[in-house]
Image: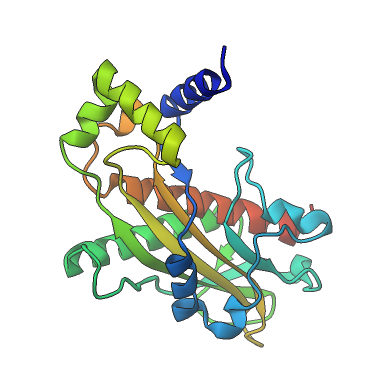
Length: 241
């Protein structure tokens, strides 16, 4: 079997199980990260894993990078934090965003709900700053809708599915999918010291279960993945594992 044929087979397997996948951000998208995080935090972001036990910041349980760009304060007293103050999540799309204001609000509210639900499984959620409390600030930078009908056709009809697989091999993304870009900043709630930050972009994967979902389903799947990864990482760092 040729290398390219093997790649097609591997992509086909991924196409059958992944609901969302990380994708590379463009230089312009990386530049826009400073809008929410601010230039001082943006300057600390790196694609290089942090040292020691914090190298887990770089890879999720599935083996893929958690965030394309990230920063972790490895000197912070992580194990003292057991509470979380989750700030309202905002949408930071530019003037060229294709999302309507109502869809922007729906996605921001959905993002907050899934992050809140996941964090509640590991932390006490509070409404005020205090000792041992992390402030988590998230922003949805933009989101893209999947193309109706064509998305379903590309995943259900065998010939179209094969073409979608080839597109994945060539470009790293599937045809007609949607997606989203998000940023997170984690601070000490009292001192406002930045303890961690990240920027990531995810697009729709190839799971058949997503073939007939609504146009913003891929964006929602990305948020589900971010909420789980954020909680897993914070749970590991604050427990000392």
